[in-house]
Length: 305
Image (cartoon, rainbow, N blue to C red; front, side):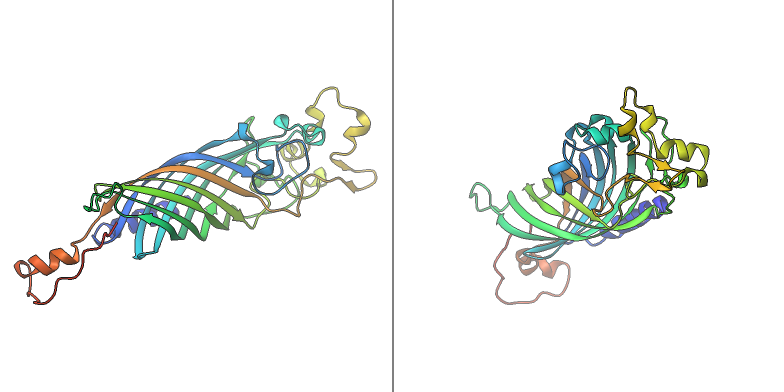
């Protein structure tokens, strides 16, 4: 799946360079974080950024191509490679500390989004040369990702171990949405900034969702990583009974919050290069040198960036 993402993106950007009209392509560097069941702050699971642990902010790199389909609308295809992490040791919630789970996940994310511009200035500095500009936009779209959660300590792949007795796919769909802006310099260079939150339809980016499963159906390694409360020293034995599976009574304690799906967010700086075609003024004045000349009134110049 990872190879198919990369091949698709290379083929797409290769075809883009032939268009030479209203396209720009480039790369992005930034940071990432996640919202899920592991880590977090002092309370139980909360939505959006309220439960994110800033100490677990990690990296994001990617490439993209963008096409301006209308004066107020562009379409962007982006491939990102990012890491998200979580660790119950960093939480100030006693129950999460005692659960003692952790993970990291290197994600490949491929998305198509539409950017709607709500503010623009195509002539910064009022030079009347339309060489520098600014645009701000909202965006939303659809994406696909490849996910592979592992332990922070030991780098053990968690999905094959079925730590909750559940099989889940490494591939899923998400809904990216956010806000961004970019400056255009000398008509050809763009520097941008973007905040992108992906809503997913899975609760297993961190390998945690529901209840503890019967360890008798797991491998020894899976059972050990399903319940790691026994690794915590000095824990009250009565409190420790709230974690794991009780074989005598068949009691399955809560391991995660299955009522909320996982999500992740990136904040990125980007650079892109604009592939510009000939303006209507150029075609009106000089088109006869390259093809049949059409006489008539020259259309008004309008900034294309």
